[in-house]
Image: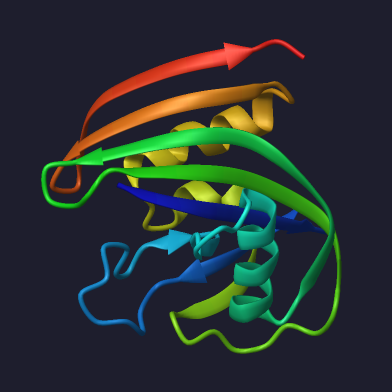
Length: 154
C-alpha cells in the first residue's frame, strides 16, 4: 500500500499539469496528472505535499486545501491512497520536472487530455462542489471498472 499526495495548482483559470513522459516503467506514462508523490518516513500529508511540489515544480505553496481522498485500486499495481489537494497561491519560479513536462492548461480543456478515466470524475467534482469527498477507483489495466463516491457536506 502506498500513501501519496496529488496537487492541482490553479492560476488564471488554469491547472498546472504534468505530462508524464520522462520516467521508465511509469504507471502514469503519457498521462497528464497533477504534481505530488510518495510520503517519506514520518511525513504528514502536508509536509509531503509541500516537499513534492517544491521538488517537481520549484514552487512553494502558500495557500492550499485538502479536497479529497482517492483510493486507487488496480489488478496491476499496489493500492494507493491519494491525498488530493488544490492550491491557488504560491511563490517561486517554475522549473523543469524530471518526471515530465509541466504546462498550464485551461480548466475547460482538461477533458481533452490523455487522463485516467477516474481523473475525469474527480475533476468534475472539483468543479461542481467545494465539499470534501472520498472516491474509490478500481482499475483492470487502464480500464475503470468500479467507482464509489462518498461526499461530506461542508
